[in-house]
Image 1: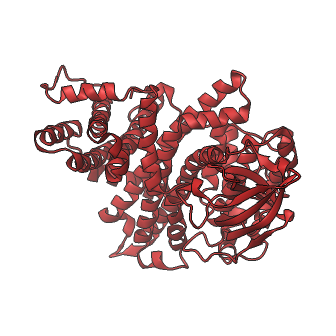
Image 2: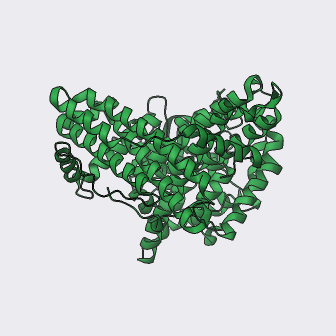
Image 3: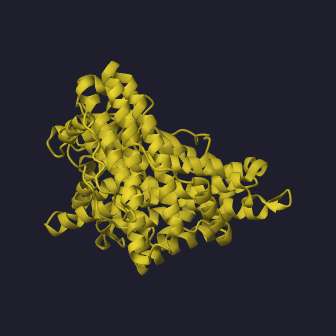
Length: 581
């Protein structure tokens, strides 16, 4: 809604020495403990994943989120995000450790009583106990609050008896502690419980046979009169759905970080192979068709990283402010992330789809070897696919992005309709060309301002035209979401490059300028297409013609030779033999 300054954002080039050391430790752990045994992990060798998690615990990797008083080495949110990225290329291990430290542990950390935290967090931090999260059921996936699992209070009021079925439970085969969601009696909303495996009444189906992340333990879990002490109710009765939503906000942006780590590793492998594979007398990486693929992998990854850490720093700033104001740190984290829930949903969608692109082109660069299980791309391709489903499908997250924006507008937190109405008036006026601005980023900033106008025009008109029907017009909602995603990423990338130019100079950042300009040139077309699809869905006649004309104006960019830009980017990667941005 407003124009941001590069001075107000964080960029990855600003990591401090301690943060970089933690990231390096994570990468070294993968190289030593995970990558050499990937086939054994995928075959689910008995006890292997537990053993690797125990080694990770010895390095403190299971306690990065947990305060020292509960046995952890609590680091700030931004550092935790970097660690998540650095472990992201750990295939099934990355899924297991993320489930343990994230959705398995965070509900207790953020919502547990002092007694619950003292009992469970030290054991989860040390790895003595492994955690799991039981929300999804056969009949409730995206519609999580429709779960049928029941909790019945005993006559003496000492325990709840939980009965129901959960599915797709990560770490289910070896977890000692489950965060279980169930409805008490005839409650409308879920409640949450901390359930120990030793409570009894718990049975597991065999491991699921999955397309990817084969080494991740995934089970159906049945609770049959599982007796849970009343003191193990997590937070308040009927607060379970809120817990699930808030923990998913954390999970979404962390998934984007993990996907980013995978992207960088896959690109490096693709670049290495493109330099080694000789065809027609030359490495395939010297040919334009392959250079286009490598450069586009790098551009999308750089864009994802730019937006990811911009959002993460924004969250961290809110967390710090709330903590300094006296709010308990765990609650401050939830509140900070909640304020940026739109960005978390955006990053989940964008990060997972960038990884999807990167692994697909990685297979293509490897050619026939890309399809072989003996080469690294086959596993990367299969394992990446789950990310568009995890933490809420990308379709759900697209709809949430728009829904949350509109709800904030209705609450008066942001003025959406004011600017939208102003832009509608601008469509009927003659453009003000004014004196040309020749500063370095003038054109790019103008593009982004116009992209925002395009989205406001489409969203504002859709709200006015469809009103309460908009929610059921899911295709239009997803068109608007795609415009918002493109704009947020475009602005983040432009601000990052502008900040780097201010730090290093234009010449030093020449390739980053290539990346930014190529991205914006292509992004304009994607925004135009999404806007056009939406407009043609709800507008007709003169209204449609005027809006399409405005969309064309707002998504216009100057000509740019993206072919040469991509060649320069790919040539640099070939010289470095890795992803080097």
